Length: 462
Image (cartoon, rainbow, N blue to C red):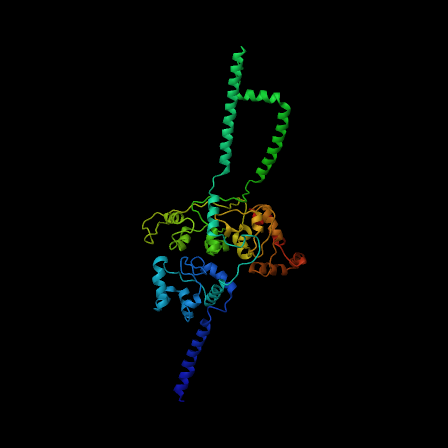
């Protein structure tokens, strides 16, 4: 073998072969061998708004049997997920069929900011998702998605008229009957007196008649008066204590929206719509543009048909018939009614709880995936959940000061679980006083939010 041949083999052929081999190893098992747990989190954050793990079409084809449909095209599916147009430019016939079938209706999929390792995790999760059995046992209806029939029934129940109106109507009818009966009684007495030659009944106002009756029955009236005084004192005290407390509050909204369909049935992660919860003090209300990410393609709801989705189109100016936005349309925001509203003097930071504390949204907001509309949960609804990792069961009424303090007193902190607590740990160890404080905190082997300053007034109040 001459020098030129050896140079060609060592400098070109060997590296090229190694690259091919590495590429084959990287992509050869993209549908298996990943971390399904990580894949589930990535899937919910990046894919669930458009894809389902079944064969059902949401705003894009379902992902069931994706490993069969993309068999032998591991490298191409990675390219398709990261840059769909570039993958389509390869001329692959399967991708060409996808484009022809879905792009005209749903538009191009946005390239996803995920690495090859992330895609491996996602596809591993998708492949195993259909085989994952639902958790057995637990409270009825806690871990299971509501059926469409149950959601429709819940919607109808929420739209029933307020019973207070009927109480007012019935009370008014009874008052009219009482006044009419008093007038009839007076007329009968006058008729009897006239027949017997007696003078007519002295004309008195209703108030004068009532005073006369109460004086004649003063013992009975005194007992009733004492009872009413005690009753209204208790009711008044309870009403004053309920000011600003709204557990069970379920306001009407300008557009009927079902968390049970979006979050539970369609597996859309909370953070997809409330994206600022992980990086801001506010969870945020999704803009109409976020709704249109899916509803540009999904034009008919399972419960309400086109009526409610049309309200989204009316706000942003979208023509569902042509699938295009209306030129020159004056867009207007959807005015949602707030479900939770803290007083102005209270500071609360979502990111501190979600990102640093790693608190599951359902630990505070309850099983929203079982609600048809936004709802302030009761303590019983929160505590009954069986699918929340690290659930802190509390007795106080949600979104009250006592409820927050109870949680801070019970919630254990993983000092090595985040960079924030690691830094705090290092600061404690940096001084003698800090080391003594750390020993006191960790005396029982655990540390709570309260022990780390979570009960200081200035943490939550301006």
